[in-house]
Length: 246
Image (cartoon, rainbow, N blue to C red; front, side, top):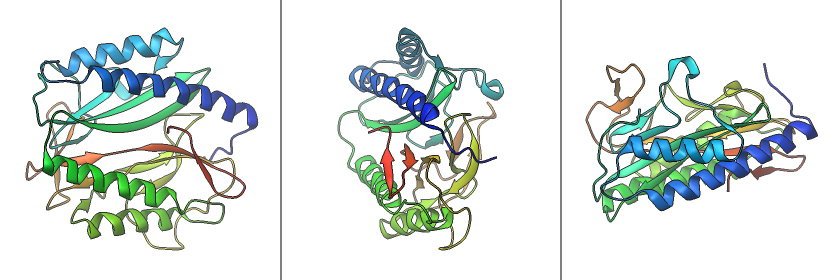
């Protein structure tokens, strides 16, 4: 089911996104060599609860943590652990915030210290994200977005994962329509004002093949090369779009 958001829905989603931005700022400030991913997860949980909201991912289909934290070759759904972050690591935080029964879901990537290869794929992923968002307006199709995402990824020398992608969000964590990271122009779902979408390019180095770890959540590149994931939540407006998580 596709939810066209009411003004009341959008107001509540904006509040959830405002809290998400506070969590992002705190995680960015605290992410440094020597801290563990489970410590960062606890920081996120405290920050979310402090603002009278709840972590959307905790216990969602059995997910055991407040947020997803994926490091280096881990693409998505990383489970926080005692892993101690090192200089050169690239960490993606995927954070969901539920406030007044409405949800913000968005992801960002932090590189600790300097890592030229990590910076390159992070920049390419963010470019793919922003150029895909820039075409959003009523009448555009989800296939147009996916086509643009893959076009930018490939022009930067990377592959997109085919089995995971973006989605509607706001009234529920995962709503229709799916917004894959590949597609054909003019295919898929036609966008309408009031839709709220998570656009989330997921780029991989050298191959789009992946494995799922024994924890049954974490998606890792099969070749153990770097991956990257960025995500913004976007409102389709009467004339275009508004990024709610920037």
